[in-house]
Structures are given as structure tokens and as C-alpha cells.
Amino acid sequence: MVTKWLHILELGGDPWILPIWTAKNDAVQAGRVSELTPEVIQKGGYITIRLNMFPRIIDRINKKCKELYKKIEIRKPEHEFSRPKENGKAAFKIDYNLKYCLIIDIDSLLFELNSCCNYMTSIFEDLYKHVGNPIKKKSGGLRIKKVLQDAGQNTDWFAMLDDLRNYFMHTGSANIAVDLTNAPQYDLLIMKENLFEFTDQNKFRRLSDLDYIVQGFIAAKQIIQKHLIQLYQSI
Image (tube, rainbow, N blue to C red; front, side, top):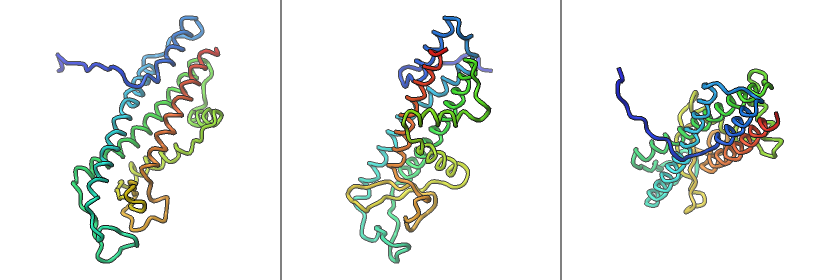
């Protein structure tokens, strides 16, 4: 049995949930709603932990990409492909720790972003129920999408996130290549399979696509936060 332990202090980080809890507390103190259950409060903690992961994962991805781009500067002509399955061409060898840690971080970012979106959807539904306006089962995502669209945000970033996360979780594994087209300005290619041509956009994504997903999420969480604060203020 565990008879002695050490808790690790949680300080700083993303305070996304705190203004929502402040609005909820004001409504509780005014007698407009009862207190939330501990289970719902705990979901807020789960979201906070994931929000605190993202900057660190993104920083690791960016650092590893810079390291990768620096290493490929010593490549030779036989490493540069321009047509499918060219004779005499060879893949460029790098340290496997760099390659696989980069893939791990990409996979982690997609998984944790998707997981955080699911928790935000769940707490969105919980808070609507808390104020006496329950959302139909499994309709929270559609309600959030409408909130974002009403605020003028394009929501196609989530479809891209959902596609990549589901593919790499259930169908295949990510692999990487480097786009040399505009060298020395490089772009990381995230492949759904080992490609020898890049004509089908459905089979790969770019590092810039990950950034598009992240920026879409950042904008969305601010809109959702504001909406949930107003939810309590309006009752």
C-alpha cells in the first residue's frame, strides 16, 4: 500500500477554465444555480493539464525540425528525389532518436489536441445542463461548431485534426520527409504512408498544417470560454 507520497505542485500554465469557474461561482453565490459536481470540476483540471502540455510539445517539434533541417544541409544529389522511385537515389540517414522523437511528438500533439477538444465538448454539455438548458445527447460538438461559426471562425481545422488523429490512431503510422522545393526554406512533410510522389494531398500534411490546426484551436478555445462565461451571466 502507498503510505507516504509527494504531490507535485501545479503552478502557472493556461488559465482557460478559471474565468468560467468565476462566472459559475458568481451564479452559485447569487442562488441562480447549485454547485457543480466534483466530477465536472475535475474535467476542468483535465483540460488545464492538456493545455499546459501543448506549448511544450510544440516547442519540442519546432526544435527537432530545426535540428533536422540543419542536418540535411550535408545531403548529396543522390538524396534528392524529384520523380517517383528514381534509380540511384537513396534516403538520407539521420539519428533515429531525432526521427522517432519527432514522430512521437507529432503523434502526441494530435492525440492531446483531439482529447482536449473532447473534454471541452463534454464540459460544454455539462455546463449547459447545469444552467437548466441540456443539449441533446451527442449534439455538443454541433452546438460548439455553430458557436464558432457564429463568431466568424472557420472550423475546417477540426476536420483536419480529426482526420489525422483517427488515421494515425487506428489505420497507419506517421512517417516524415522534407520538402526541398524552396530550399533552403524547408517544410516538414508528414506522410500517412511511405510516399514516392506528393500529388495526393489526402496522403500527407505539412508542418504548416499542424500550425493551422493549433491556431484554429487557440482561437476556438477563446470563443468557447467567452460563450460559457456569458452562459452563466445570462441566467
